[in-house]
Image 1 (cartoon, rainbow, N blue to C red):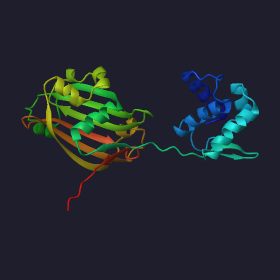
Image 2: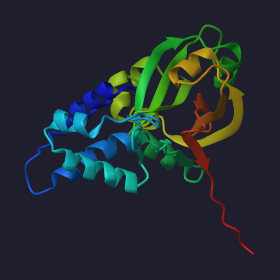
Image 3: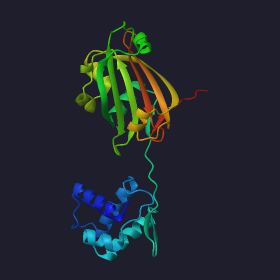
Image 4: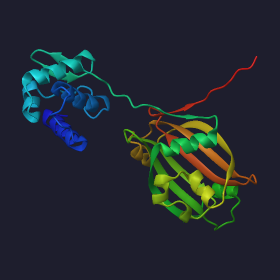
Length: 261
């Protein structure tokens, strides 16, 4: 990332936020906050060379003293390193915050995670399932189920962390792309009369196939956390089979156990 690109990024963010350079807040603090936000969220990455005091001053109409103070504040927080004759380098290494999904209260936690992440639909259609899925769902040869392929992204950084393939005993009208932007699959199944009473989960690991790696911004054969989920209705009938492939750098499962003496 070159210096002109960094200034362009800062200018875009300045416009998006409607940043005003007048007002009671000191100018150096406004520039410091503008730079810090882009560094901390990984937009300006580790090792990037920041524009000089003169370049930043010209770009934002600020004095060199004001820019210097903003850069000194970043250095004091160890976000950048300043060296005479070498300029200012970003030393902060961005690490995505893990998305944690507790195993306890599974139905509630699935709904909570659904509301606080973003769903991107890749494919939705009524299809004849593979033989093993067809047999598990109790379908006869030629019968269809709803096949849904989605990617989930974190709500804040918009990072793809999960790739889902599901087969459900319903038609594809149940899960429209628009509906999935506002509701979880569990909520949509409830609306059409299917109430889940039990979910079984199996956790394993596998190497990322090419299509999954592409959607999760990973290299092919990267390690994935895989969760296979089988959901049953109130009558104990298996109505949904889903496999979720997760980027382990962004997603973690958390399980708490109480120990009674």
